[in-house]
Image (cartoon, rainbow, N blue to C red; front, side):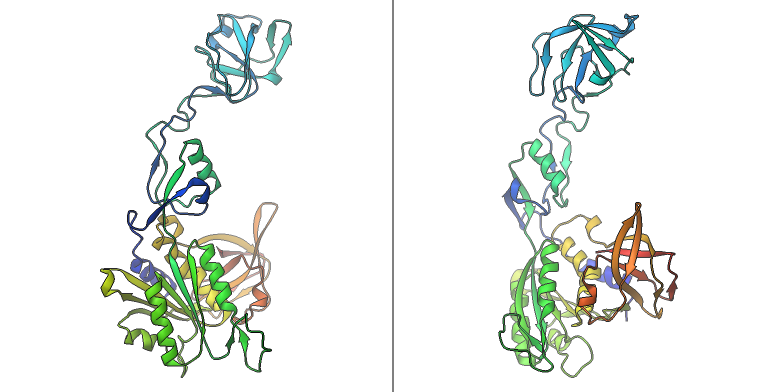
Length: 414
């Protein structure tokens, strides 16, 4: 049984990121939210493009204040709203009314905000002496033309899209979305679409919907192959179809030591290399990680994840291991490959047997700016209802058996 860190390292080493030329598509900027940028984008412009005011107020030459004993300046007759410039410079001893974003006239180097002035006819009385360069945004202060604006591998969010729009990027090259096939296994599973009443021993295939949502949330395309009964021949056919149609496959159930657990046997029959068979984690100990080469596609291979069938164990395997694999495969930079951990005060005692790295689910909230972890009451891996609202997991390392209420715990954000 491998450690959590070993399994993470094995998985990420197996993932071969998409090719930035072959595995990319060109999209209008408006359609790129949460997509991964496939190439560096350089700014064609200086930002700001010209010196401008960061405040509503009056623009002036700082040197003129050195010659003024009473901090009084004449006010030029023009005004400079945003989006306009004046052709002529102001004369010595003058200031000019300017609004946020307005372009500074030649020679002007300082802005004083309106609240620090008093208008007296054609003159302006300054209540305070501003610092030289105050409230001025200089040309190229944010970025200069030819500099990288957004790096390849960046997940495009609202701020990135806004910056690209300001740089007049109408189309963007992004990586294609990974295709992830999802298979559920088990005689007990019933499709949500089945209108027949549940029989004794039957359960709804909730994993299909939870995994599809997780895959979509991770920026990939979920391909459902539905539920497959515990028949080896039927499962083999579905597995082959899934492997042929996707970059990655996730199957739930069939990876433990039961008489009907056929996933590893079938993977070996298909010529897969199996790298992980179990991991020292709770929940989620049964975990199969394999890779299958495609003779017709050169060095291309499909990664296969066989995860436990218990709903929380299924999600745990995804949160801890598969999400990062999808991020790396899809071209995201390294900061997106690993879970995000932080410290938070737990509201209740946390317990673990200490033999495996244990993850306890609950909610992360903030009280007066301080992170607080609220664990759930029931940690059954089959209790999907108890996992409602989960947004974080307290982590108990191997040999750590207790964290008292009120103490800090390591928390993984999901």
